[in-house]
Length: 201
Image (cartoon, rainbow, N blue to C red):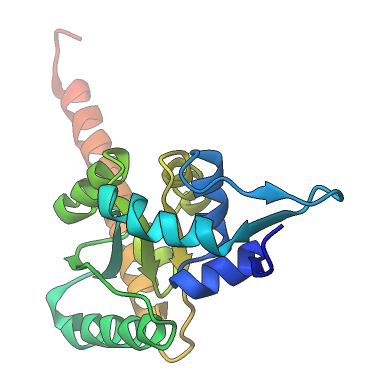
């Protein structure tokens, strides 16, 4: 056995990634862990050198910041999200490849930039997505999307920042829901009145 060995958490720290990423590389056969007699994973310096010299140049997945607000009047909050996430990743030695700034309701599944990001995930172009809150990515169903993203070997990292309050946006989203249902109810009433007025029915 080599004198210098590394645990998965050591490898993650050394490469500026999460332990989940190291585990994923193991499962994909890109950086296969050795095992101790107690069946614990470990890595040698030769393995790490070989991986850094070959695999990372062959497959370069992106680290992406995703920030979202509901409307353009919240542009300052959008900037705050990006700045906070940059500080977070920089402190951990992570290099960000792309920043996605999105404007649209968290209830809207047709956001162009958001869908493009999901396409990149499915194309296995993404390593990690950094967001300040779960609802920045999607208002409802976050756990489902998180599991979906992980199926493609990517990871979504939620970095909570208490100074970024989403309460105002939540109120706006609730108002949007009420507006949609109100329109539908109004439409049904209008249709009902037309039926009453129609002598042939």
